[in-house]
Amino acid sequence: RKEVEQDPGPFNVPEGATVAFNCTYSNSASQSFFWYRQDCRKEPKLLMSVYSSGNEDGRFTAQLNRASQYISLLIRDSKLSDSATYLCVVTLHNTDKLIFGTGTRLQVFP
Amino acid sequence: ETGVTQTPRHLVMGMTNKKSLKCEQHLGHNAMYWYKQSAKKPLELMFVYSLEERVENNSVPSRFSPECPNSSHLFLHLHTLQPEDSALYLCASSVAGGGETQYFGPGTRLLVL
Image 1: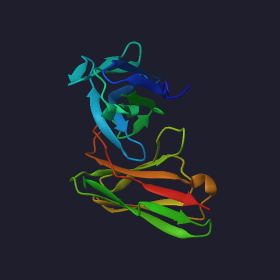
Image 2: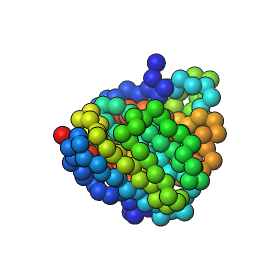
Image 3: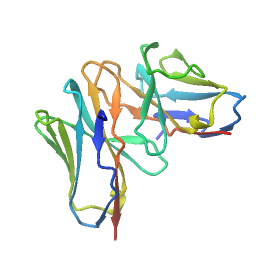
């Protein structure tokens, strides 16, 4: 079983749509959770951290369910510029080691 | 953005060559990382340096040799690589201590012929 599992997509959605990505992780000792965004042929960049209480940053909402070992990212009112690959990332307790999913590709069309 | 820089950005090398990748961070971090990104695979952590000491070596073949002379610089020395080593090599840095945000450089796209 992969340590971090994501649906690779692609998700093709029109501008203005709401889209949700899911991610599951296998190690219950995972401590910190993130969504990174990677544009084509560019480096990954942090989109947002994910907290147990859930958190929102503008059009983006992240949720964490520790019991189910499940993380989600919701994007509302999609923009063309949201087109990218979204990487689910976890770290283990007290380590600097990031464990990446393969990413979910999003394509927003006009 | 110039927080983490990497050189060269592109590299083509033969299997008998020796080359080095360089990474420099200007963020005052004290942990640095090398990752490999191949097509259709998740980013793979190769090495972690925390406070200039190597704390993680993820079963990477010895043809990859990291060097961290100080907290701002990280090198990856390459020798006798194989074609399957062709990939994007990403450097990252962070504050050491677990669970901190990592900031990535633009990567070196390596092709081994």
